[in-house]
Image (cartoon, rainbow, N blue to C red):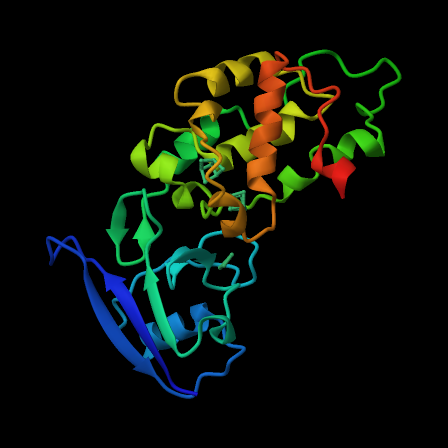
Length: 246
Ligand code: SF4
Ligand code: F3S
Ligand code: FES
Protein backbone atom coordinates (compact mmCIF):
# COMPACT_ATOMS: atom_id res chain seq x y z
CA UNK A 1 0.00 0.00 0.00
CA UNK A 2 0.99 3.65 -0.42
CA UNK A 3 0.77 6.05 2.53
CA UNK A 4 0.80 9.80 3.04
CA UNK A 5 2.67 11.08 6.08
CA UNK A 6 2.34 14.68 7.22
CA UNK A 7 5.19 15.67 9.53
CA UNK A 8 5.57 18.80 11.64
CA UNK A 9 9.00 20.17 10.79
CA UNK A 10 11.15 22.74 12.58
CA UNK A 11 14.74 23.81 12.05
CA UNK A 12 15.68 26.71 14.35
CA UNK A 13 18.59 27.61 12.04
CA UNK A 14 16.24 28.20 9.11
CA UNK A 15 12.69 28.91 10.30
CA UNK A 16 11.19 30.98 13.07
CA UNK A 17 8.16 28.69 13.23
CA UNK A 18 7.28 25.07 12.63
CA UNK A 19 5.48 24.03 9.45
CA UNK A 20 3.86 20.89 8.01
CA UNK A 21 5.42 18.88 5.22
CA UNK A 22 3.75 15.94 3.46
CA UNK A 23 5.53 12.93 1.96
CA UNK A 24 4.15 10.02 -0.05
CA UNK A 25 5.74 6.65 0.65
CA UNK A 26 5.14 3.64 -1.60
CA UNK A 27 5.08 -0.11 -0.96
CA UNK A 28 4.39 -0.04 2.77
CA UNK A 29 3.06 -3.15 4.52
CA UNK A 30 0.16 -2.73 7.00
CA UNK A 31 2.41 -4.38 9.59
CA UNK A 32 5.20 -1.84 9.10
CA UNK A 33 5.86 0.48 12.03
CA UNK A 34 5.36 4.25 11.78
CA UNK A 35 9.08 4.29 12.57
CA UNK A 36 9.67 2.34 9.32
CA UNK A 37 7.71 4.96 7.39
CA UNK A 38 9.74 7.76 8.99
CA UNK A 39 12.95 5.91 8.13
CA UNK A 40 11.82 5.57 4.51
CA UNK A 41 11.26 9.35 4.40
CA UNK A 42 14.63 10.05 6.00
CA UNK A 43 16.62 7.54 3.96
CA UNK A 44 14.94 8.05 0.58
CA UNK A 45 13.48 11.57 0.46
CA UNK A 46 14.87 13.98 3.08
CA UNK A 47 17.95 13.10 5.11
CA UNK A 48 17.50 16.18 7.28
CA UNK A 49 14.41 14.74 8.99
CA UNK A 50 15.40 14.51 12.65
CA UNK A 51 13.98 12.04 15.16
CA UNK A 52 15.10 10.00 18.16
CA UNK A 53 14.94 6.23 18.13
CA UNK A 54 17.12 3.38 19.25
CA UNK A 55 15.74 -0.09 20.01
CA UNK A 56 12.79 -0.12 17.55
CA UNK A 57 11.08 -2.61 19.88
CA UNK A 58 9.29 -0.57 22.55
CA UNK A 59 12.07 -0.87 25.12
CA UNK A 60 14.19 2.29 25.13
CA UNK A 61 11.33 4.83 25.16
CA UNK A 62 13.11 7.29 22.88
CA UNK A 63 10.63 7.64 19.99
CA UNK A 64 7.56 9.08 21.71
CA UNK A 65 5.62 11.37 19.36
CA UNK A 66 2.07 12.44 18.61
CA UNK A 67 0.71 10.12 15.93
CA UNK A 68 -2.67 11.08 14.51
CA UNK A 69 -3.24 13.17 17.64
CA UNK A 70 -2.28 10.57 20.27
CA UNK A 71 0.98 10.12 22.16
CA UNK A 72 2.51 6.87 20.95
CA UNK A 73 5.86 5.20 20.36
CA UNK A 74 6.58 5.20 16.61
CA UNK A 75 8.03 1.69 16.87
CA UNK A 76 4.95 0.25 18.60
CA UNK A 77 2.41 1.84 16.25
CA UNK A 78 1.71 0.02 13.01
CA UNK A 79 0.38 1.39 9.74
CA UNK A 80 -2.64 -0.90 10.16
CA UNK A 81 -3.41 1.08 13.36
CA UNK A 82 -3.35 4.49 11.67
CA UNK A 83 -4.47 3.81 8.09
CA UNK A 84 -2.82 5.28 5.01
CA UNK A 85 -3.11 8.88 6.19
CA UNK A 86 -0.60 9.53 8.96
CA UNK A 87 0.16 12.71 10.87
CA UNK A 88 3.21 12.97 13.11
CA UNK A 89 4.31 15.80 15.40
CA UNK A 90 6.48 16.23 18.51
CA UNK A 91 5.04 15.48 21.96
CA UNK A 92 3.50 18.52 23.66
CA UNK A 93 4.75 20.53 26.62
CA UNK A 94 8.53 20.22 26.09
CA UNK A 95 10.62 22.61 23.97
CA UNK A 96 11.09 21.39 20.39
CA UNK A 97 14.77 21.31 19.41
CA UNK A 98 14.33 20.16 15.82
CA UNK A 99 11.59 18.33 13.87
CA UNK A 100 10.37 15.50 16.17
CA UNK A 101 13.10 15.92 18.80
CA UNK A 102 12.16 17.66 22.06
CA UNK A 103 14.36 18.73 24.96
CA UNK A 104 13.86 15.96 27.55
CA UNK A 105 15.89 17.69 30.29
CA UNK A 106 12.87 19.35 32.02
CA UNK A 107 11.22 15.90 32.08
CA UNK A 108 14.31 14.27 33.60
CA UNK A 109 14.64 17.12 36.13
CA UNK A 110 11.20 16.12 37.47
CA UNK A 111 12.23 12.46 37.40
CA UNK A 112 15.37 13.17 39.43
CA UNK A 113 13.44 15.32 41.93
CA UNK A 114 11.49 12.34 43.35
CA UNK A 115 14.63 10.38 44.31
CA UNK A 116 14.03 7.48 41.90
CA UNK A 117 16.47 5.16 43.60
CA UNK A 118 16.57 2.77 46.55
CA UNK A 119 17.31 4.40 49.93
CA UNK A 120 18.30 2.33 52.95
CA UNK A 121 21.34 3.35 54.96
CA UNK A 122 20.97 0.60 57.56
CA UNK A 123 23.58 -2.18 57.55
CA UNK A 124 22.60 -5.30 55.62
CA UNK A 125 21.24 -8.10 57.87
CA UNK A 126 23.90 -9.71 60.11
CA UNK A 127 23.64 -13.03 58.29
CA UNK A 128 25.03 -11.25 55.22
CA UNK A 129 22.00 -12.06 53.10
CA UNK A 130 20.23 -9.59 50.86
CA UNK A 131 17.32 -7.55 52.15
CA UNK A 132 14.61 -10.08 51.45
CA UNK A 133 11.07 -9.33 50.37
CA UNK A 134 7.97 -11.49 50.04
CA UNK A 135 6.41 -12.06 46.62
CA UNK A 136 3.29 -10.24 47.85
CA UNK A 137 5.33 -7.17 48.85
CA UNK A 138 7.16 -7.22 45.51
CA UNK A 139 3.83 -7.26 43.67
CA UNK A 140 2.72 -3.99 45.29
CA UNK A 141 4.98 -2.02 42.94
CA UNK A 142 5.22 -4.44 40.01
CA UNK A 143 3.15 -2.19 37.75
CA UNK A 144 5.40 0.82 38.21
CA UNK A 145 8.62 -1.11 37.47
CA UNK A 146 7.53 -1.36 33.83
CA UNK A 147 8.08 2.35 33.09
CA UNK A 148 10.58 3.09 30.30
CA UNK A 149 10.57 6.90 30.83
CA UNK A 150 9.20 7.62 27.37
CA UNK A 151 7.28 10.74 28.57
CA UNK A 152 4.09 9.77 26.69
CA UNK A 153 2.11 10.18 29.92
CA UNK A 154 3.52 13.49 31.16
CA UNK A 155 3.30 15.16 27.75
CA UNK A 156 -0.33 14.06 27.30
CA UNK A 157 -1.38 15.69 30.59
CA UNK A 158 -3.24 19.03 30.30
CA UNK A 159 -2.22 19.85 33.87
CA UNK A 160 1.45 19.62 32.74
CA UNK A 161 0.75 21.66 29.58
CA UNK A 162 -0.74 24.40 31.80
CA UNK A 163 2.10 24.32 34.33
CA UNK A 164 5.39 22.67 33.43
CA UNK A 165 6.50 22.88 37.06
CA UNK A 166 4.04 20.03 37.79
CA UNK A 167 6.22 17.00 38.53
CA UNK A 168 4.07 14.94 36.13
CA UNK A 169 2.77 11.37 36.00
CA UNK A 170 6.02 9.70 34.91
CA UNK A 171 7.91 11.01 37.94
CA UNK A 172 5.04 9.92 40.20
CA UNK A 173 5.13 6.41 38.70
CA UNK A 174 8.87 6.30 39.43
CA UNK A 175 8.27 7.51 42.99
CA UNK A 176 5.58 4.84 43.44
CA UNK A 177 8.09 2.13 42.59
CA UNK A 178 10.12 3.09 45.70
CA UNK A 179 7.35 4.38 48.02
CA UNK A 180 5.72 0.93 47.94
CA UNK A 181 9.01 -0.98 48.28
CA UNK A 182 8.97 -2.33 51.85
CA UNK A 183 12.80 -2.28 51.98
CA UNK A 184 13.11 1.42 51.10
CA UNK A 185 13.39 4.14 53.76
CA UNK A 186 13.38 7.31 51.67
CA UNK A 187 9.67 8.06 51.85
CA UNK A 188 9.86 11.08 54.17
CA UNK A 189 11.96 13.03 51.65
CA UNK A 190 10.02 11.78 48.61
CA UNK A 191 6.73 12.74 50.20
CA UNK A 192 8.03 16.21 50.94
CA UNK A 193 8.70 16.70 47.22
CA UNK A 194 5.40 15.16 46.14
CA UNK A 195 3.34 17.15 48.69
CA UNK A 196 4.70 20.48 47.42
CA UNK A 197 2.36 22.76 45.40
CA UNK A 198 3.68 21.38 42.09
CA UNK A 199 3.67 17.79 43.30
CA UNK A 200 1.08 15.05 43.08
CA UNK A 201 -1.96 17.24 43.87
CA UNK A 202 -1.56 19.00 40.50
CA UNK A 203 -3.00 15.79 39.06
CA UNK A 204 -6.67 16.55 38.43
CA UNK A 205 -7.48 12.95 37.46
CA UNK A 206 -7.84 13.87 33.79
CA UNK A 207 -6.83 10.32 32.76
CA UNK A 208 -5.01 11.19 29.48
CA UNK A 209 -1.89 9.58 30.89
CA UNK A 210 -3.29 6.06 31.24
CA UNK A 211 -4.21 5.32 27.59
CA UNK A 212 -1.00 7.10 26.49
CA UNK A 213 1.25 4.61 28.31
CA UNK A 214 2.83 2.11 25.88
CA UNK A 215 3.61 -0.20 28.80
CA UNK A 216 -0.04 -0.48 29.88
CA UNK A 217 0.75 0.94 33.31
CA UNK A 218 -2.44 2.08 35.06
CA UNK A 219 -0.89 5.49 35.55
CA UNK A 220 -3.90 7.29 37.05
CA UNK A 221 -4.42 4.48 39.59
CA UNK A 222 -0.71 4.52 40.49
CA UNK A 223 -0.99 8.28 41.10
CA UNK A 224 -4.06 7.65 43.27
CA UNK A 225 -2.10 5.15 45.35
CA UNK A 226 0.68 7.71 45.88
CA UNK A 227 -1.91 10.31 46.95
CA UNK A 228 -3.28 7.84 49.52
CA UNK A 229 0.24 7.06 50.75
CA UNK A 230 0.88 10.78 51.24
CA UNK A 231 -2.38 11.18 53.16
CA UNK A 232 -1.18 8.33 55.41
CA UNK A 233 2.14 10.13 55.93
CA UNK A 234 4.12 7.61 53.90
CA UNK A 235 2.50 4.48 55.33
CA UNK A 236 1.41 2.17 52.54
CA UNK A 237 -0.38 -0.49 54.63
CA UNK A 238 -4.03 -1.02 53.82
CA UNK A 239 -4.04 0.73 50.42
CA UNK A 240 -6.01 -1.45 47.99
CA UNK A 241 -3.71 -1.88 45.03
CA UNK A 242 -3.71 -2.93 41.40
CA UNK A 243 -2.05 -6.20 42.43
CA UNK A 244 -5.02 -6.99 44.69
CA UNK A 245 -7.64 -6.11 42.08
CA UNK A 246 -6.34 -8.13 39.12
FE1 SF4 B 1 6.10 6.13 29.43
FE2 SF4 B 1 4.22 4.78 30.79
FE3 SF4 B 1 6.53 5.44 31.99
FE4 SF4 B 1 4.75 7.32 31.42
S1 SF4 B 1 4.46 5.61 32.87
S2 SF4 B 1 6.95 7.46 31.05
S3 SF4 B 1 3.90 6.60 29.51
S4 SF4 B 1 6.26 4.06 30.24
FE1 F3S C 1 -2.70 14.42 34.17
FE2 F3S C 1 -3.03 11.83 34.26
FE3 F3S C 1 -3.53 13.29 36.39
S1 F3S C 1 -3.54 13.16 32.56
S2 F3S C 1 -4.19 15.22 35.56
S3 F3S C 1 -1.56 13.04 35.44
S4 F3S C 1 -4.68 11.50 35.71
FE1 FES D 1 13.01 2.28 21.45
FE2 FES D 1 10.76 2.89 20.13
S1 FES D 1 12.82 3.06 19.41
S2 FES D 1 10.98 2.39 22.22
